[in-house]
Image (tube, rainbow, N blue to C red; front, side, top):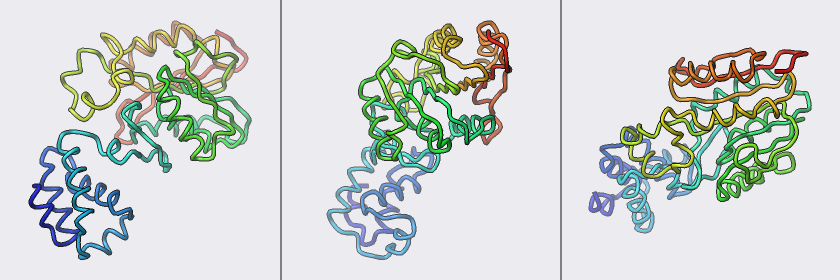
Length: 293
């Protein structure tokens, strides 16, 4: 592979050699193209237009380095330092979970049940890169929000992302172990907390288990320890008529969460969230007007 990339005459042949070196990737051609765009500083259209251009020595050297890293299992987002979510670019490092497109259904669901023109407060528990908080604030121009994370590095990255997206005036990101440094009530509380059972670690792909932060992945024997903690306190922070929106990993977890939520917020309506593939992805708890739990 090293020789093939080194000897590639054109950008297209460099990409082909890179893809051939990624046999265990689920999308080797796409991975190679993303890395080539990153190395060359161009978009898809420019990459196509430059397909027959000579591949420079410095570009091939950097491309080979990145392909080696990807072949070892490192996620593309950590190599490039960026991941798109809700049409917006987010800086990511190994200190934060990589934003997943599947989680966009949480944002969609909030927007379906929210008056976009109304002033409101948003709380993002376990904010990581800040992708959920920033996506919501981008769609809710009258809203302000707070993102919390127990990782100081994640807090720094979320702040950087909010600033880069022009949202820092409405987004505060603080260090907090769930609600420990939070006060007041929120109209929307959203959480993509860790939900992978500890025993599932050996079954994960290398690019997840060996690279993404364990703190953001694993959550006890059944993967629901964080949600038990959150649900114990949620009633003190969710405003009347507020929405609590969470992501989980399996239908079994969803069934357990619904039972747990019914005992903590008995007057809240429950709505199951499904992703674009119609898989269970999350749960909405909606407080009924005029009632408190």
